[in-house]
Amino acid sequence: MTRVRRWLPGLLLVTPSIIAIAVFVYGMLGWNFRLAMTDRHDEISEGSFVGLENFVTLWDQKRWGISVNHAVVFTVVFVFGALALGWLLAFLMEKGIKGEGTFRAVYLFPMAISFVATGVVWRWLMNSGQDERAVGLNRLFDSLGLDFLQWEWFRNPDWGMAAMAIPAIWQMSGYVMALFLAGFRGVPEDLREAARVDGCTEWQVYRHIVLPLLRPVTLSALIILGHISLKVFDLIVAVSGKQIITDVPAVFMWVAVFDSHDPAKGATIAAYIVLAVSVFVIPYLVWTLRKERRP
Image (cartoon, rainbow, N blue to C red; front, top):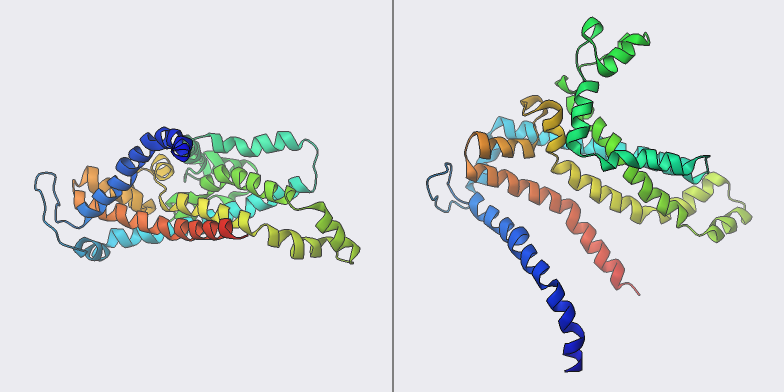
């Protein structure tokens, strides 16, 4: 009876949250996967079970292949760009610079802005107009005499999605910097001093002591950035709208559901996005559980 009194109040406190998550997260996920396995391609019919047919036929559509390719390019550039810039900023902070608090606030500030607001600003900065029609970055390059740097930005058919990742890197690199800075500051100074006493140079201290201890931070940042990039929607729409040249699965899903009125196709695309995000999240959860069980 005493044990029940100990855990019952806590259970009652979290029960509403558990029910809400079960219904509105996992329940909706299950409903989405069920809808994706039906032939309900309009908003009127009930639809019948067709198994994985929608998952297979989706790959026959050219636009789906384009959106997946764009998502891969965006993910690679965004994840590695934000990791590299965030690590560099944290490294400079860790070496000690004057006004660190001010710089830290400046770098973290973009994270407080929504992707929509960021997209509106960067849509102007990455305007593809050149020479006398140039605005934004192209106007800046023109004023500085760096005309060769003027570019089509996100309208470029080959590298447009790489350019689209620049606003995302700008917004998230400060957050990554904060993660790496906490990691740098968490390395015991005794270990560094012991390595220096043993004759290690400063580069060797970072290579053999600091960087290996930053692996958990790097993995966490990789997971967070990876799942953000795979489900990106608001930034893309704010910058370029629903154009095929910058299409990604989330935008394609919106078009399928609200423009084409095809619930089954939209649910299939959403299911693929969930599975792609799971590729990042599940290994992280497994790694976290194993770490917690370690004595």
